Length: 290
Image (cartoon, rainbow, N blue to C red):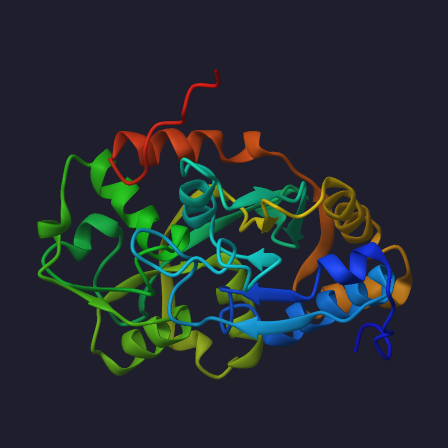
């Protein structure tokens, strides 16, 4: 387990950062975010309370915004949510320029990931087009890997949602995999990092599944802070995250989640995705600066 007993202090950082929310569990283990929060709390000389929001991969249209109402200071969420919240007339978040780098060899140490199109090993499909007319599962309507990646692919093929016979909201990547295994859905696009961790936990089930396509790379899920957080505090958080993984113990801890560590990031990483979501009418075009 990373970190030690959390210290309580009265520094500006500890007064400014008290609450973190992850929208990425259970796909990515809760223990990962607990460890990161313990590490940050130790270095910010305070206490960070972590909450989990499993209903969706991040707030978007019509959802409660915990960053706007002060219920979250730090957030781990999917990139469509970041782009939506950042594009509001009054942005409620800003990016922490430190991002996860997973050990997937295709990522080559960069902050990217992929969507794996998964079916039963016994399914006759050999590619995504073979799933036309079938039942498609997706985790939620904010997920890049599980939902928007499919929208992007259908747009590329000049198709729409009618391509499938039926679509089922499963609630999580794990539930999508369960649905494939029990036959309630025929296929789903699964976050490659989540799928890698799932395979480690369920080696007996791996032979029952087959990946027929991989989409990406896509920009990794961003880490954000509420927009009203002081720049000095967010800079401190960035520095802490980029330093995490500097010891063999920390690198071993990262590896247990399939991670290499944190690497520098920037808003530019999400530029192509922003353009695509604007083109599809999901988010508003960026506002011109006066």
